[in-house]
Length: 256
Image 1 (cartoon, rainbow, N blue to C red):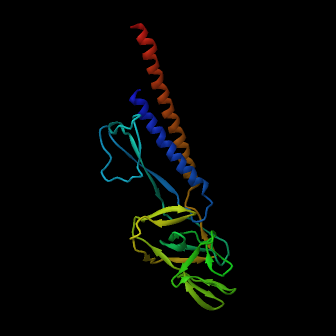
Image 2: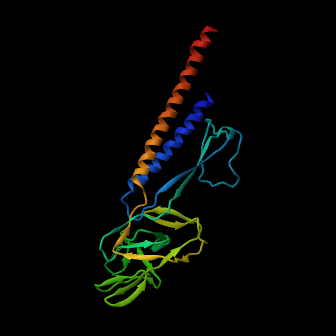
Image 3: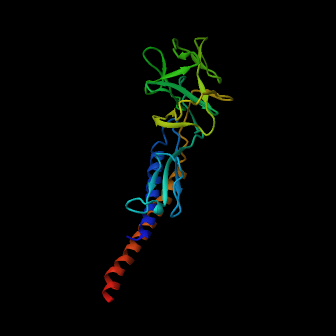
């Protein structure tokens, strides 16, 4: 089969993967604390090889049925999370907290400590501060228990209940680029367990606010239109090459 078809098919698959990621971003535009993903690809010239020691999660988009290395066109290397902050929305709920600056809330899960920017918390039956999924939010003193009515959280995360300070919200940060991976429900986990948390600096907490998704709807929809048009173009290329090949087989061969 013509190598041109494989080249065009490689481009079409790239657009398909981009569309899937963009669609997921758009579907989470109203998810509190959601961080959008961006696709990461790497192209290779014919005859070149992927870098040694590359990620095992790299998906080769091949130019041949048996995926010969000399025909590789593109490698999908996964997604990269955009950690830029989203806009904040006022709710007036005393347990809704938004972070201003770089850092993450710490949440205790069955898999260990995980991190999030999703701050629409609540209290469980035991009076513990938890996420919407029921996971425990951590303070500098461990689990945060609130027993009272008048709850005030200042800009530094100090929690005062009925005039008495109870604990301080634990906010941490990491070296850039962030060594974090998504694990669902706007949660992140460390890719390397050996990475050490740093106390977040120059960060403030806004009580009664939540941080919205950082997905920009207009930009995502514009990219989706671009992807669809590119995909259609690759389809036309494939059809044109197929038509030329068909004529070469059925007409040129017959004349000969």
